[in-house]
Length: 355
Image (tube, rainbow, N blue to C red; front, side, top):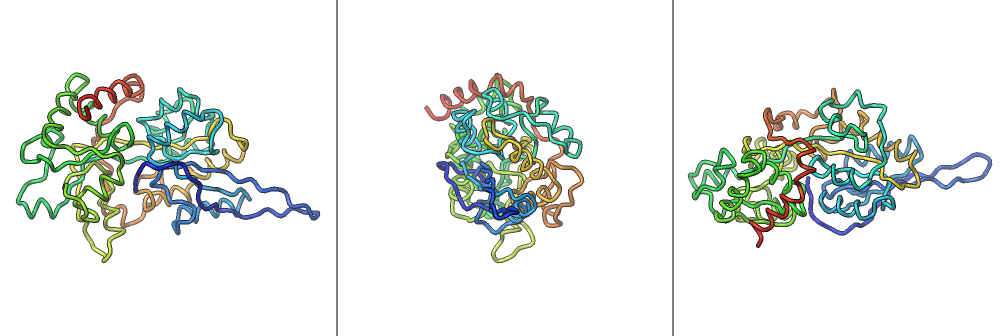
């Protein structure tokens, strides 16, 4: 998981050479998959990379992974290089950023042959097929169970609770201008309190000592008291599946997560992949996109990215099902409303919270 801001950098390629007949060795195509920083790089020993290696073995198309930082940073870079991309396929643009990259012409429209195998509610978000849904999850406030037990304080139950005096100086959030979960959380507050009320809420949060950092990695692993236990704050904006990740990666092993989710704070996040406009390998890029929404790769998504696959009917790992639930009534917002107001809301938020 995650999303720290970093500069664009290439990492290990997953590649197998093609050997042609008649003595000639044709130059193999190497695709660059641009992804956010929670996506395993090519050197990582994960089932996602094993699946990509299978793609290479089956097609002869090598895949090099480039980590572009948080999704917000990745989107900004993609807009600046639209039509002259630094890769061929991009993974991780979400529904809070989709209009920005679509309007800028970042992606080449492509209608996947497997759309009928993907969740119809997700595919409906991009009728022009510039992007294809690959996963979904929920951004929510997480809390450190032991901290609240030790302090004999009930954890918050609602967004409103977070501004109450008993939770002063307990919450860390990500900057919505640089972090996708931070932007999602801002949208959650707009969805909850309305276009005329969210500003007052954030003034209350600021007055109650909310801490703002640039990335999910900084918030979760450095400032949050749960997980690695390094930080002073027992409330953090993270994901509904973060407690599952805590169990999967626990050392020593544990049966129950040390963290939990405040369900009423959750906002639905959908992530997409797409073929970057201007790629020199459009045909091969489409093949890779088809693979990313195929059953084998989608089955590897839950325990690598800790989100739900966009493909329906995928058999999910038992440990994921034991500790992850699809939030029954998450906060949502129409992409058109996000597109019309996102930049103005970010400017207002910056004025209220950071100035």
